[in-house]
Image (cartoon, rainbow, N blue to C red; front, side):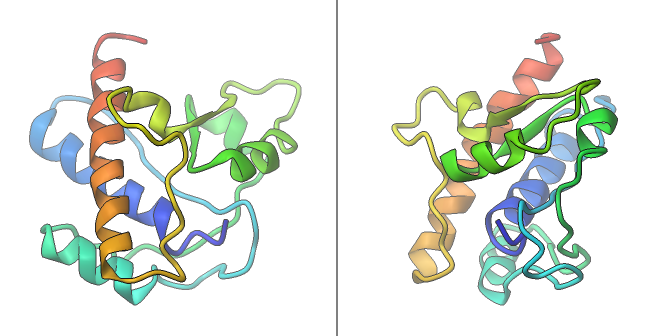
Length: 148
C-alpha cells in the first residue's frame, strides 16, 4: 500500500537473488505502493534491519506510487495481497503490457495467498515477509528463466 514494508523488501530480495543466482538474467525491478502515503520515504527501519540481517540493503530505495504507466513499462506487476490487487487493477490502462498478479502465485508451496503486512507487528512479522519474498522471488525467477 505505502511502499515502505512489503514491496521494497520484495524488491530487495528479488534483486539480490537474481544477481546471486541468475547473473545473466536481464531484469529490472522496481516497487511501488497503491497509495501515496509515504512517497519519497525510505523503507521502514524494521524492514531495513530484517533485510540487512540477510545481507540485503534496502537503504537506497524510496517509496513511490503505482501509476498507470507502470502497466505499459513493465512486463509484470506483482502485488502483495487481495486489496492491492483490486487497487492496482483499477489503474490498468487499455494498452497494458502487464496485468497485476499476486506475488505469492509464484510460491505454490506456500499456504498463504497474501503477504501479510508487518507494519503493526513485531520482528518476526518482518522475517516472515522476507521468507515469503524469497519463496516467491525464486519461483518468479524460475518462471522468467523458462519464458513463462
